[in-house]
Image (cartoon, rainbow, N blue to C red; front, side, top):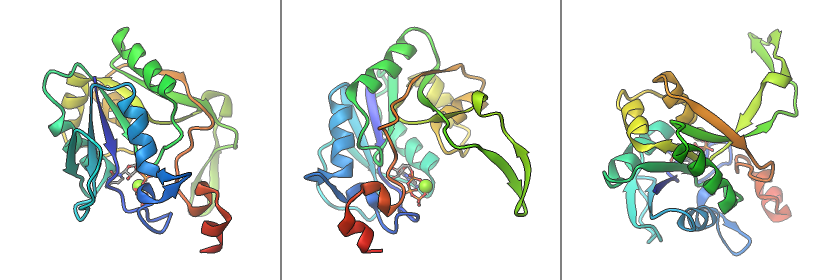
Length: 206
Ligand code: CTP
Ligand code: MG
């Protein structure tokens, strides 16, 4: 089982490459890599094209313009004999090894893909032109995290068409795959904005 850590984003909402910021003594990406290494046989790290710092991964490749492009670049580097592939956002440094194990186990038990999901706490509305057009039933909604695990063949086939989505489960779903959910962790937040790193120093830098 191999893992792909996607760290090739530009962090527009954060205002810089958040995956290389410091968080409690190491970079955000290093926490994500360490969690992957604890469960995977090998790790492919996908970095921005201009990135030249040494990284602790088995394979390092350059990413693309979109997250899906970056995953495809990582997938091309995963050894052909890996039966299960994990995809993890570098920007989720708080994911615990148990979460990785849970999604991998669900795939080993027969699912095409498995994703961690947590209940939505905000009310979610569909909006068009500044006007609410629908209020969705929160009881039916979940927020989905990474790590996500997939049967390698299913993920490769689903990504072969070059589709775009904000996560890989959506790519597999679009290809007709069966994606199951495992309990996610509310602490497994994605670093998106400065405030997500939580330091007053960084907040004052705004
Ligand atoms: N990512 C990537 N390649 C891209 C875009 C995103 O590898 N072309 C990675 C990011 O580095 C991050 C993960 O995908 O670890 C989730 O993406 P997101 O949180 O959206 O990060 P960014 O795209 O960098 O941020 P923003 O959308 O605010 O620009
Ligand atoms: Mg993005």
